[in-house]
Image 1 (cartoon, rainbow, N blue to C red):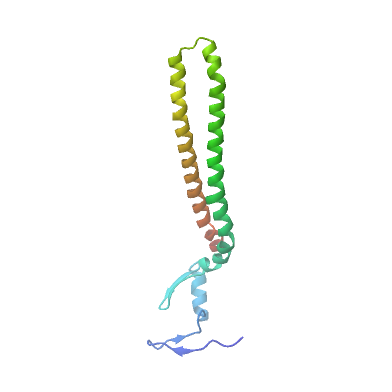
Image 2 (cartoon, rainbow, N blue to C red):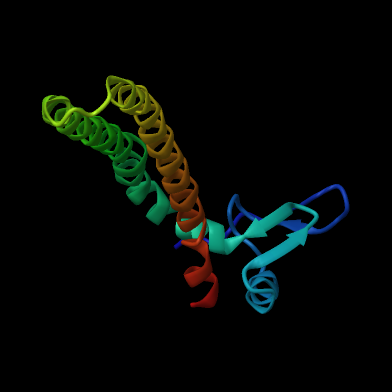
Length: 148
């Protein structure tokens, strides 16, 4: 391995080849749990170590949670409402045959539309909660790297 190129910066300190640091800088970074700042800038070695993992995991993670799971939740709410409508359709003639007042049946029909909106809202809230949680979990990848 070739030795790093050394030259002096305007302050008179040595500058090493791009990406390299003086050995004492590595020790300082290790003592400060992967975080360190000097005249060249900020160093976050934990972030640099976890970056390849996130790059490999992120596309599948995003595809699973933001696209597929959202589609599954929407399908779930649609299917749940279909079951509710089917039940209502089957129960309506039976209710009419037992002399249930048509006003009560009309109220149930109106409530059916309300339940459709509620199911849709609950599905949207569930998708939002899942997206929030997956983002939180995604941020937690860095913690084990810092601890290790």
